[in-house]
Amino acid sequence: MLKLHLSTTGSPVWAIADQLIVSGGSFCTSLIAAYVLTKNGFATYSLALLSVQFILSFERALLAQPLAVLGATEQPEALLRRYKTVLQLLWLCTPAGCCVLIAASAAFFPDVFVLGATAALLLILGIQEIFRRYLYTVRNFRAATLWSCLTYCLQLALLASLSSSGNARRDSGFEVLIACAIAGALPLVLSLGRRRQNVTAGALRATFVEHWKFAKWVVYSQLVFWTSTQAYPFLLEGYKAEGLADFFVANSLLNVLNVLRTAIGNYLPTRASAVLNDGGPRELAKFMFRNVWIYAATSLLILVVLISSSALLIETLYGGKYAAAAPLLALMSLAHLAYVISAIGNAIGLALRATKWIFIGNSLGAAFSMTIGVALVHKFGVWGAAVGYVLAAALPAIAQGANVVFTLREQVASESVRD
Image (tube, rainbow, N blue to C red):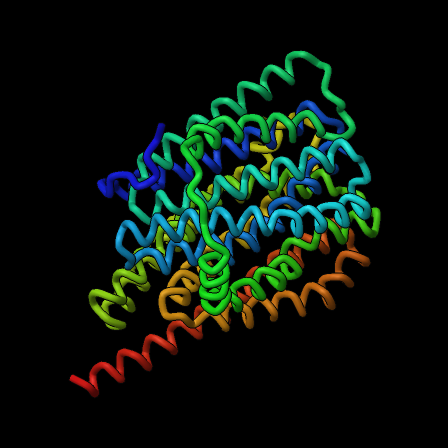
């Protein structure tokens, strides 16, 4: 059985490999679902999965990210205790997440079988996220990569079998969601199949309070982030606008690029905290600008390729079924650069404990989406959603980036005065 505290020997290259597997596996899952399901079925499946990701974003902000950042400077025994306590907290948070799923199901995908599948997937992905974040904190990127590989190989094998059988409910995506849940459960059992250690109520309360004090603005920011950029599919469904499935196809291709954003979110907060602790704000500023140049240059290159080849890409992958997704992909890809800059700013903000501006930046995007964005969707349908999506992604990147630069400049100046 796998020991939870693993060797700290690990290269960041493994972290990139892990995110390549996660992003590639997620994209292949979406690709198979788009082939197997009808356009309405694919839209239903995507709305259900998006609802799960909405809840997971709060669990990640309150439980997983503080585990990585607060645990980065702890001794191995203390970090292991925190990890086990966070797992217990996740179980306590799951019923609240299921209540949100029930409400989303009633409004957007009223199918009891789809609801059950999404509830199972929510629990499994939540535990996986915390387990992976623990492995990243102890810098065992190789173990995280192998775990992701096992999960997605099993998942794609199940989906390939489902696709070849021809027995899937093509109008709902229930079997696709169940296959994802089953595939995630096996490595989960292997990783957690050791004797469970009891955690006292006092330890649960103390850890929850510590995490909440650290991450409350990040939790708030998740609500406004989702209102800012991820509300557009739900707005399209609410207005019964044409093109929802095409919007999801374009978005699923963009999600492949999440390898950069997710790698930043998993790796940079822990690393930035260590850099600040070891070298102070001056070294953190150098670290930030170095990463901005690296990731921004990589993103710009990807965008040029993606925009110039969007029509060919959609035709090759989907044939004529989702032809309208090609111009949407070219437009929506502009949001990727904003997401990368935001992820770097958020990582440095977490290290600086300047999390309030993550909330403020996302609030600007949310205010835009709930006013101008709603009007754009109402007037222009799926094209209004695409334009609103890009603009709402840019506002938080600008706000958080400016705040981090200003905060670091102040801290560097104060350090110079002390010296």
